[in-house]
Image (cartoon, rainbow, N blue to C red; front, side):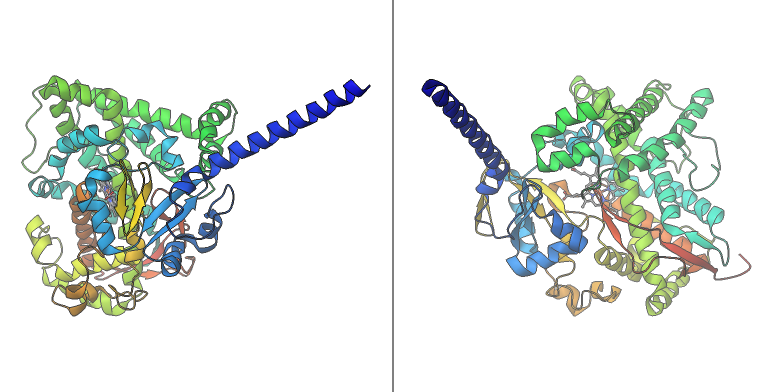
Amino acid sequence: MEMGKILLAMEEYTFTFLAMAVGFLVVVYLYEPYWKVRHVPGPVPLPLIGHLHLLAKHGPDVFPVLAKKHGPVFRFHVGRQPLIIVADAELCKEVGIKKFKSMPNRSLPSPIANSPIHLKGLFATRDSRWSAMRNIIVSVYQPSHLAGLIPAMDSCIRRAAAASLGDGEEVVFSDLALSLATDVIGQAAFGADFGLSGKPPAPPSVDGGAAAAEKSASSEFINMHIYSTTSLKMDMSGSLSTIAGTFLPFLQKPLRQVLLRLPGSADREITRVNGELRRMMDAIVATRATASPAPAPRPPHKSKDFLSVVLAARESDASTRELLSPDYLSALTYEHLLAGSATTAFTLSSLVYLVANHPEVEDKLLREIDAFGPHDDRVPTADDLQTKFPYLDQVVKESMRFFMVSPLVARETSEQVEIGGYALPKSTWVWMAPGVLAKDPVNFAEPEVFRPERFDPAGDEQRRRHPYAFIPFGIGPRVCIGQKFALQEIKLAVIHLYQRYVFRHSPTMESPLEFQFGIVLNFKHDVKLRVVKRRKDC
Ligand code: HEM
């Protein structure tokens, strides 16, 4: 009897001990990343969710709020993972440029870590592989090469405007901008005409039956691409395994394996779509790779597209062929479409939305555009875009400042480094906050006012501003590779549109605009505008 009691007590003790040990390990697991950076100021994180409740409450505005309270370097916990947010122009210069060698890579949040097709693009690759790939691609985005893309960009813009903009009509401008930007990047990345923003004016660039196959594959590809882009959520509305990965990263992979077998789960659908995308990319790449080695001469205006540059590089030597294996090639191509369309479309939509609400800006912009000459006379050259549209330049910058599509820019330390007086150990996630810089009254007086003149190079505000206070394309060697491409496209589109139309807010549009936090910022609802033709005869 006595013996039985003793055994029972021992069992209870063992159970309690085990429960305590497991509890202790869970707490250690949850707090281990926090422990390493606990000396950096920040609000108290809640168990499991960290500071996500603050993101839910304030939206992207949470970061300026926290910077005001905790200073320019602070902690923000996405679930278990602390981010060290850097919200000061000089310190961003340190992170992005001066100490680049200690932070050359991006940390990957769970939506990307969960998505094989995103992992092999330029954005997510690391160290020497990244620099080798970037060196190959960068030639596509040199100014001389970009100048050659103007006719293709212009024809997409004309077609989109002609197909969708009728006098007095309401248009979902954010959709139009996305179709347009996707068509433009399709031309530049694949040499293919998706025809999303209107009927393709000419046959696609590859001949014969392969061309038809490529085109229909491309259209399907775009629909999936949009699904795939919008499923990359940073808040808690993503797939279940992504959410689990935010709280307990070790669970993400095994849970995903289970969810993949569950019909109707978001994980299964995302994986299906990504698999399809991957197959389509492989088909497009294969078609192009096996095309005649001596392609027909291009029309004089036709510039080489991204894929042809990358394929040619792959043929140049064995090490490049190894570097750009089929996996990497399809991921890179897909990434260009992804990175180049949502961002540019968001910026174009923001600009037109803001100008519609600021008649004094619209007047000044129209005067500059009209001074260039009557529409249809000539398409601006790259040189014209540089020199003849200084006010447009200011309007683009102010729109990007006002609604910043990429308010956070990620890095990860590869060794211990000191930022703003805080020692950050290896593997710390350091995220710069261009969105906070853009709303800082020190560099932008009355930041909530839309005033393009603040970017006038002769103005006081611009001259006094820190050179890295406005970094919508990021900073340093990992700066956006498509920056000049995007600006060229946005300026061409704005000139074309305002030569012919002005826009007014539609009464059916939700106001004020709301945003959702994906891998980039997106509109929660459509940007709906009413089209007013400037001259009824055109
Ligand atoms: C308004 C349009 C755009 C904005 C605001 C934008 C913004 C950004 C930002 C903030 C980054 C991160 C930079 C950093 O880490 O320092 C980035 C990276 C990147 N962007 Fe863009 N982007 C735009 C358009 C484009 C276009 C048109 C393309 C391609 C044609 C593109 C391709 C890329 C790629 C490949 C990267 C990764 C670069 C690397 O890691 O080396 N982006 N972009």
